[in-house]
Length: 393
Ligand SMILES: Nc1nc2c(ncn2[C@@H]2O[C@H](COP(=O)(O)OP(=O)(O)O)[C@@H](O)[C@H]2O)c(=O)[nH]1
Ligand SMILES: *[C@@H]1O[C@H](CO)[C@@H](O)[C@H](O)[C@H]1NC(C)=O
Ligand SMILES: *[C@@H]1O[C@H](CO)[C@@H](O)[C@H](O)[C@H]1NC(C)=O
Ligand SMILES: [Mg+2]
Image (cartoon, rainbow, N blue to C red):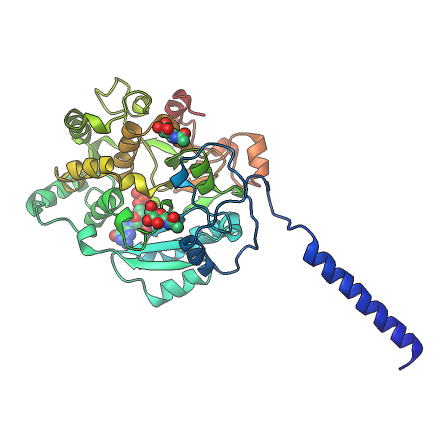
């Protein structure tokens, strides 16, 4: 070999070795605030490892900043909570499901790889599954809803339900005449957290087809919930349509009288749902198309008793009770108001209603693409002011 060629080759080998050594021993650099999200390992390229890690939880390496009840500190090796996304959808919702999922992945989950659960009362088609799986390396599971969790129970008086639906359709009550919508509201009120694919999780983030995520979500909202002792999280709060819930509050009052042990009387959020100390319903509710919340809360004895009590009245069919007021009333009565959290930093849109972070600081940090002036928060149909008045956080 020529002398000069040998010299060049030796220099190359030396440089490559130095680069390799530097890479091996240089510190891992993590996106975002390293204090908040103590990643210690590599981000997994496939979240099949999520399951493996969850089954064998490892203690977090950095002590959380706040007191957490010991049994709730369950973070896996990558720092994730015991959590999943849940999307209820029909096969015909594929396009909207893809739009929501794409944004959720880009704005948040590509850095976290939380798993997804899709639920439907029918089998998802192979095409649906293939197109969804194509958008995320995370674990995706598709489940069929047991029919007894979806269709109206046999003790519902069909004639009475049909008559009520016809009447609501005549009065143009939104979705009033749509039986599938009634089933959906009852399922989301009392059953989604019982689905076998959901059983193994403690936390969920509800996602719907065709929603938008306007901003980067660089901090993990699930970890936020765990570390700050939160149980229910929302972004938008609105007034319910009166014709859908005519007898709901009456039944809630009966429930409160019968089961005072399930009602938190000191520090609950009653003022959000009632302007007269429980006499009437303010019609305010957290909009449940976005929820980040504890599955264990819905599985609790208090909420189960509440759901069963309401369900037995038939109001999901004889009226058109939504899961949003049912969830919200339970959260407001059974939790401390400080256990409910408004995710101000999550830019979110459902249909024409949008929440955009209000401060310039959050808007810039999140690289948001919403207009802060188009935010629904302080419009007259919003319950945001009532929430602010509770003075949480
Ligand atoms: N599988 C299934 N999902 C449904 C059905 N009806 C509504 N959904 C889902 O339930 C959620 C709420 O429905 P949507 O039409 O968005 O109602 P809105 O948000 O109240 O206007 C969405 O995730 C829908 O995909 C149904 O009949 N079957
Ligand atoms: C979490 O909040 C609930 C409701 O305020 C309270 O009862 C509980 O003690 C809190 N736990 C911790 C560890 O702060
Ligand atoms: C996650 O939460 C579910 C429901 O609370 C629980 O059954 C499961 O054991 C938890 N998994 C881990 C790894 O803690
Ligand atoms: Mg919707």
